Image 1 (cartoon, rainbow, N blue to C red):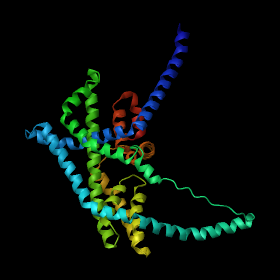
Image 2 (cartoon, helix red, strand yellow):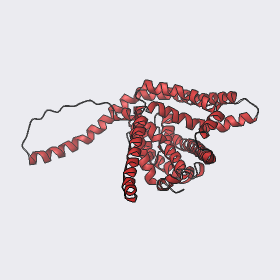
Image 3 (cartoon, rainbow, N blue to C red):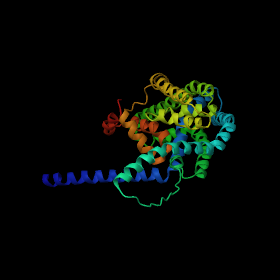
Image 4 (cartoon, rainbow, N blue to C red):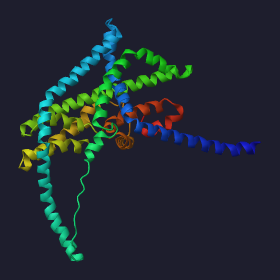
Length: 355
């Protein structure tokens, strides 16, 4: 009898592992093929977490929750519209000048290619006889466009997704109490308090992460934009905030933040000095943000180590493109919060970062 139990135990363990692998594959496939829906849902949840204190404050003033939710969502939409309106004229002008930037960039690349081609031909002629080779160029879709649209499918899908987010946020804020109770009822009675603590902790983490990064980006833009204006960089009012936002991306943010102003600088600069000023400014602000601003405003609630952050960014950006790159850290930090409060998953939570 004991031999039967011993022989069945490894088989049961293997079957359990296989089921977990299959389930993980199904989840990843669902995240990929239903990405536009999942992205809209995740963004709505994070925005609702951020706006909930405002709604609760209005509720304490005896304003009905549905009305407070409507007011907060409308204020948020008005703020977004105001930002877009202020930047729209410069954005349209920049879009019109992008072909000029591309043409100038091609000229710079052509100048670099000429000496490299001569060097290559010298090695080729020395090692092999001359051959008449016909060069065929195949135009491909821009990889940047593919990266930006991955996860939402198309500009139309992106527009539809964005249109649904305010409604989802409003319904989540209005029905918070019902959703909260229904979510806790999914767990056993003895685990409901633990589940409530986990959800509350995720909400606090998301709030601190989003609001803190907004403050860091605003301060960075306030430091970067005047320097861009001073050196005469075109569209500094747009490129300053864009560089500040890209600077928030861990590890590769400083390189990405330098790229847009340096490319647009091809339209106005013929000397190395302005390019150096732009690069030094972005790098200096990145150092200040990483070492002073982020610890001050974001705090230590996102307790992820460098390896887990890098792997999360690689995974979610491969799955959802630009949206995955933005959402990688809060999603992974939320998952770690769950792992830290589930006994069987605590080793995984410890691997993701210090608790």
